[in-house]
Image (cartoon, rainbow, N blue to C red):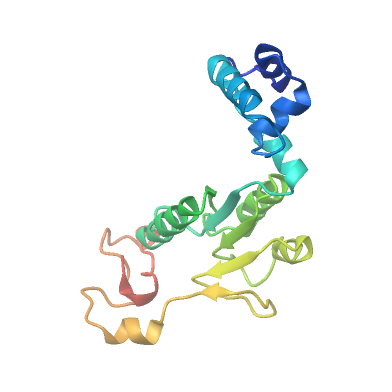
Length: 197
């Protein structure tokens, strides 16, 4: 497959105009069945892939969701990432996963990437107390959901654990106890809400 195959190449192979090839490949109904068949066959033969960035600019949709977790090593956030990714994929969205590493500056780097990539929405476990580029998300009017944490002053939908319910249910590890991986203070991290490790 040649990554440099263009829409113009597909149109030439199919014997149609670039406009017709574009309409066929974008699913527009204003094309004949014969043209659709020729264009799709040419695209397959040439290994053509739609330019998602160009398509996003035209449609103002990227079909991508940004997911920014606090620490990708934490099994709690791994579960969140898996659930979000599977749910998004079921709705024909891809998930761009990023790791803030509990750092506001790293969070801001990824938020800038998400905005540059024009994601259709962002799910974030916010770092800090509203510092950094969180306000830029509000101003960009990108659909936003906080997960695991809320931030004062932000009216954003959020998904958080029920700490009261989690602490009252039986759990082999208490919510305030460090993970049992090591006794050194550098390796000790508090468990996520609900006592899950």
